[in-house]
Structures are given as structure tokens and as C-alpha cells.
Length: 243
Image (cartoon, rainbow, N blue to C red; front, side, top):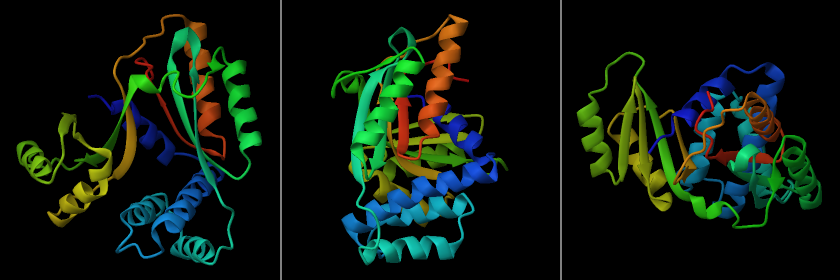
């Protein structure tokens, strides 16, 4: 399995401007609200919330903002977000899945459809490309100081319940079954590993390479516009050449 493009996307997002970082918190805050409404406001018993708090902190979100969002969600003083998934095609039939959290499905559907149409693609019906992806949990660990024993990490990950492992230049990707993601993450943390992220992922069964410069330009613009939309939480695709 290959999630290297996802890691590059994460590193790219960490270098964004203040305005873009504020947008990142807007997205994370929606996830926090959904997690609190689903599993309560105690991160000790809500693994999803615990991971989102870590995610917010890694994006330099102040603790006061995090606590305020949790309190609003607990007090029903926040919007009720609906999680909706859209599927479609980019240039040359690249499969694209767009996961959103919205308080206005008509607005979100219109905006997502607009981006597909504008950049050489088309929005399809539910299931049109979903069958090309398998839902997994993805844990990312980086070893910038070259202190991690790769064989030991792989052994520990498998013993903690992971199902696949890959390494590339100090970036370790640990795949799990979707329901095992946070349990494996917590087990690795208890063993002393520092986790960069632990999030659901959609792994494509095959990839498409774009050769035409115009198609590459449009695919980049499609992904950029989708990811910058406040209602869009995650975008998955099977474009191979996405550096």
C-alpha cells in the first residue's frame, strides 16, 4: 500500500499561511463537534476526540479554542453537522471521493459539483467510484532523528493489531482495519512511539497516471479547490502522479 502522497499533503498543510491555518481549525472544530456528539466530551473514553485534540494541537490551535468547541458541542450550542460523501471523476476518469461535514447539504453539493465541472471532471452518483477504494486506518510516524529501529517498529505495530506496514526514507505508514485505528494508535503510544497522525484513509485498488499537462493542471486545481472548501473534510483519489 502507498500513502506517501497523503504524507506529502500533510507536510504541505503544515506550511500554510495564518489564514489557511485558521481554515484548518474550522475543519478540525467540525470534526470535534461530530466526535463529541457521537461519543461524549471526555477524551479518556472517546478515542476519536483524543486524536482530534492531538491533531488540533499539532496545528497550533490554542487549548482554549479546543475546550470552547467541546463545551459548545456538549451544550448543544453548535451547529448540527451532517457527514456526506460525494463521488466523482477528475480528468481522464481519475476516481475522487470527497468527504464533507455540513450544515447545509444543498450549498455543499452545489459547490462540490461546481469544482468537478470547472476542472474537467464530473460528479457521479453514490457508489460510482467507491468500489475502487478500501477503507483503512492510517497511522503515520516520522523518524527525523533516525532513532527508530524499523524492524522493531514493524514487529510492535503487528503485535498491536496492525495489518500492514511500509517504510520510506524515515516515514512509517501503519495500516489497520478501520475499527482498530485508535486502539492500535494508543497501544503504540503506550510503547513510547510519537504518532504524527492517526486518521481514516481510503486506499485505491489501482492508480491512474496523467500524461497531459492540461489534465495535470486541472487535477491539481480540482484537489486544491476541494481541500480549501470549509465543508470538505477529506479528499481521496487514485491519481498516481500527484507530486
